[in-house]
Image (cartoon, rainbow, N blue to C red; front, side):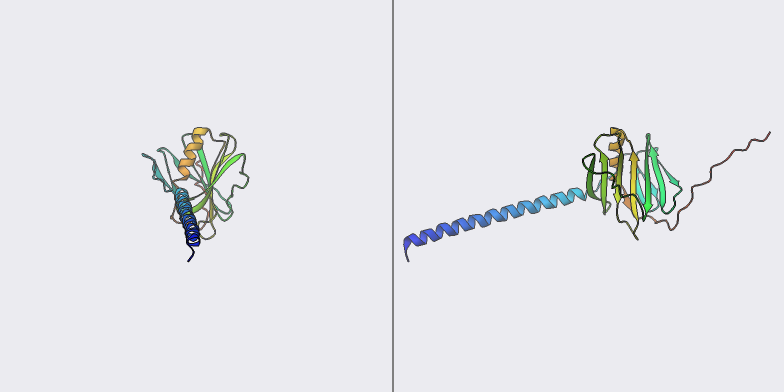
Length: 191
């Protein structure tokens, strides 16, 4: 065998081995990045210290003390709001919930995450106080969707709403029909 050819073959094999090792390292790095990204988007956030769980039938949120749930009259879905600290977050749970399509780049920040085991779209205006801060779940159960949103929130209110969105969990009883809100008490004055 020719000694020159043997050393040439060795160099070629060595370069091929180096390329193979480099390719394996790149693949491993990309795999770790993908795992890191998916775990970030599937984050589970523990309730903030001192927050309380508020049930709303098919789902719940965690919110600071003094927040309340109010059911509202819906036409074809379960409708209500969570209110506290000067913030009102309205929701629509049903087949025709708002997908927040009007909120798009560049005016809005739009993120897609997994929250409570469900795909979600989160939108917030780049300029606080100018638009909808909301979350939309396109598929919960039986074709139902959820949209929870606040309008024209200040920067602090927007941050609070985004923290609350991370605490949404599903698993309660899905309302079979929409209950009307309790009647308002009218005072009659007798003279």
